[in-house]
Length: 467
Image (cartoon, rainbow, N blue to C red; front, side, top):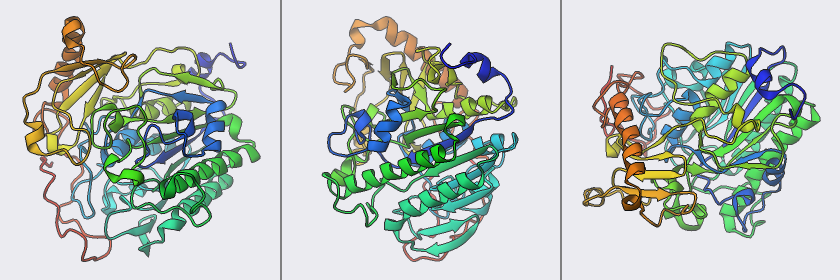
């Protein structure tokens, strides 16, 4: 027993003072972009301290692009299961269905105050906005910072058009600090989803030219400052002993953007790839007195696990009328075990691959079952149409996915293929097949938040079936 009551007993019992929860999400930050995960260029003293006081999760997975990743984080389900397998554009007719439960929905049922500061990207029509999905308050961009029209929403109202991006990180941080301070006497859930470090790169003026890694490094270091402000506020208000904080990224670095695209460290591939560089992301969990300090864990974990973990810690229950793919991570975070709760974890790309599973991981083994690209630019049909033979990697000894060992381990290949077969029977082999892939969120006549000549007049490229 490390800290008073045994963690397993504490986690399973209702609490008079349920923990606060803060999720800080970077955008397009690569596995090697922060010092705890190997960066030699970007100075991240606050994340260093967070790691020293918490746990580094070195096999933590997101989806390889932003909308599916954020859908998985919010719902605890594979993006395909909630019909959000691809990046949404402005004026998109689909979004997060009102039939889905988010972390905010379920924590609000437990009396939590809830706020999202930053990027949403799960639909920009009124029905899809955060305030319709359990958040009491929202301030931020409804989609990526390279999309038009760029608007800042205050709840469901356009507060600004073309907001100054070099002020966003500081603005978001101060809103987060205000929310924490205003809710210090009762439980809260804060989701702080930064625009940093997605292109176009816009570090704040106080950070411009200060790093050893150009403007990208400047923005990483401003993001680190933001983390420090949040953790510092929690400590100043004496909330740190009852607050779980998770820092992670929505997908890997965008390698095609060169110096503006980040660093995926030893991992192969990048954003939009189902090689490790696309979806294996830096992750640090912090909760002084509850999470053993200075620990590193390589067990497989996922952003989908956040929902079941925090709902259980809050004394809540998961909805019983649907499948939740995420699993409770508390035994892992609290040091009770080093074993992953996942028997298998699946890698999907976006709608252009028809929602097919491209790979599966189980323990150290990863089996590629379909052609994979290295990233964004080599998604051409002729590449994916090349003859493909299944490849097996041992990620413990070959983190860079360089050596296919399928021929030496036919039993492992067979076992992992069995996981794929079962998941395809559940979700379907393609976007148009199987249960769970019909879009439950659909607007017949979507509208732009403001008129803008650069914006698409309609979105037809997401070819999925609608209820």
